[in-house]
Length: 231
Image 1 (tube, rainbow, N blue to C red):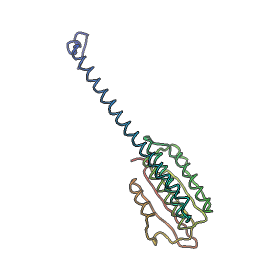
Image 2 (image 1 turned 45 degrees about the horizontal axis):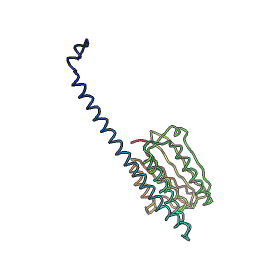
Image 3 (image 1 turned 180 degrees about the vertical axis):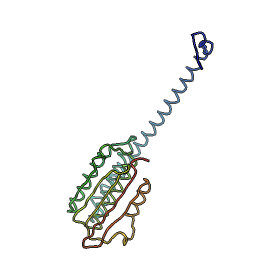
């Protein structure tokens, strides 16, 4: 449609049309504001619930960790508390975060666990990951996968050295966790909750996981996980 001259436009759009348009715009703005208000209320309620969860369950877990006599059970409770706090923190984030910031947190956590177990830690990290981001949900899943893989290595293999690597390939995040512990190759394992948990979480992210190893005394067990950066 082509309009020329003020009079031609005036014939198509009069003052009544302008008032109707203004009314429609006002209704649209009100609907948008109401939607934003509802969304904000939902987010605030979610934050409140997560804080209540942290304050109640977190306090009980902390108390329990001090009362348990067995060191392995205390570590289990401590890891559950870390996961709870991480879940609360990430639940309050809506936008993707820098992957390297989370990797730094994971490194600090794993370094502390390795030191407590008297295990050497070797860390490798692809610099190309500096430009990568992940949504909070995927960060949480990757964190739990990594934590479970490290727990399995430290608890069952009793290694001298633990190697953790992060790499980028084909728009996928690769996690490679290797240990030199004295443990049978993966094909002889009886899959327990730890291994099954890793498989289920990786599958939920649309990724792949492989377990590789060799017999003692020169055994090296490797868990290789690849998950898409985006879905």
